[in-house]
Length: 99
Image (cartoon, rainbow, N blue to C red; front, side):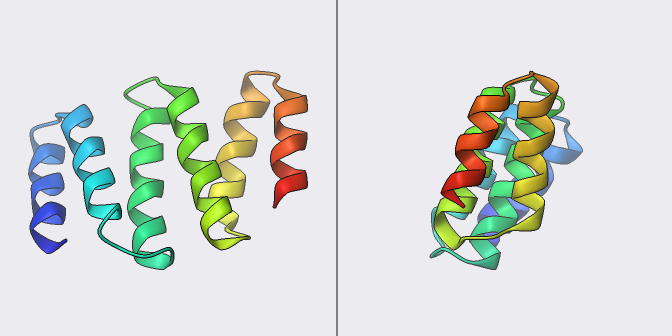
């Protein structure tokens, strides 16, 4: 995982956001549900929500975090922000019911 984190940092320096996000996802997959995994998933979700402009992928990652470990304030805020911005209120309600 440390090598993948270093690689993700290099991609960040090169501003290769897609490669950075993919590397963070690979690093996250090496951890069981919990803080280390969720931190990497949150970073990737931020890239998908922001510079990569793939909000649906960000929502998937936020939901994965919420399924993994129950309540996670950052993931809940993220999914609320993205779905709210898209006026996807029924989808947001379903996410909230599931947490």
